[in-house]
Every structure is written in structure tokens, then in C-alpha cells.
Length: 70
Picture 1 (cartoon, rainbow, N blue to C red):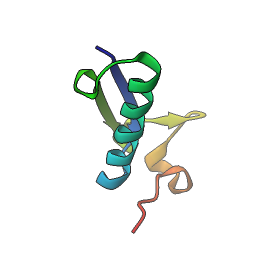
Picture 2 (picture 1 turned 90 degrees about the vertical axis):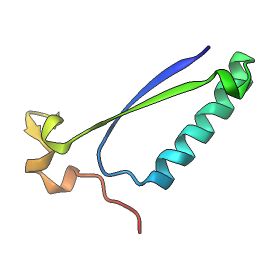
Picture 3 (picture 1 turned 45 degrees about the vertical axis):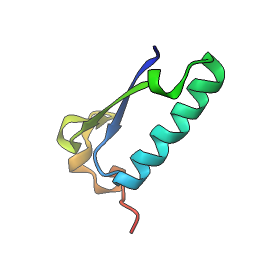
């Protein structure tokens, strides 16, 4: 049973996450030769005040924040 943990910053839409887990499940099934029912994907969303790049919190630099698609 493959278990995948994905760490992403907050700001992705449900549609984006849905597309990601659908694609990841397909790839895991094909490469690991397992049924879809055995695939587990855990998404950890980090708030922008809990993630930093080069010593700067994402919440302090709007240019690094994920933009939601409309």
C-alpha cells in the first residue's frame, strides 16, 4: 500500500488538489502495480506564516505567496 505525503503551501484550490491526487494515484498504480484502492495520499498544507524561503516568512513577502486560480 503506497502512502504518499505531500507538503504544500496554503492557497491551492480544491480543484488543484483534486487534480494532483488523481494524477499521483494514476502514476502510483501504473509504476507500483497496485490497485487504486490501496493508494493513500496525505496533503499537509502549511500556512504562509509557517514557511520561509531564504530567511523570510512567506507571509512577509507577497510575491512568494501562491495565487489562487479563479
